[in-house]
Length: 211
Image 1 (spheres, rainbow, N blue to C red):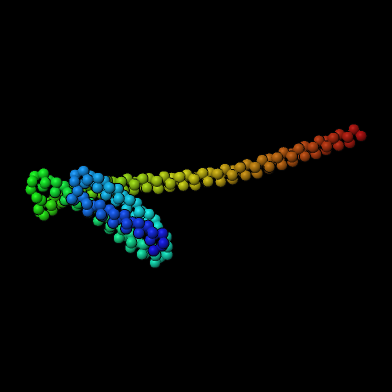
Image 2: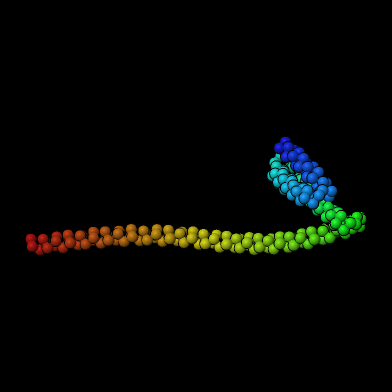
């Protein structure tokens, strides 16, 4: 790993551990504290994700051996972020289950906690599926845009070729016209020379006759 990658990775681990420490406090916190802790945990997760993006950029440097090591660390970082999200969801579910149990005066057993957690995971899964569908639609739109751009680029290239051909034809026509003009001027000069010669010849004949 490069030195800069290692520095950012150390900061990533510190933020990850801080986030996990906050998440562990959520189940046993009061209602008001839960909201504050959840907000803080989500903010920390965003910071962790930001450092992951920085690490992804840093992983583009270094030699081949360093790149392999950094890619391995990146996979571990992605896994850590996914665990943070799952642990946060689980902590919130457990906290909600404990609040409902406290409100009803009945303790929440392990099965109840598991059912509550499963319900929340089902809802989360629904949200993820919806997000995947949206991503799929966006990818399709992006593909169509890319195809349209490629087609437009092809049209522009063809138009540029036509313009180049037209310019070449115009230049060739201009050269041909210039050549014709030069020939015309030469013919005119030649005709004037002939006319002058004829005039001189006629004058000479008249002079001889008069003499």
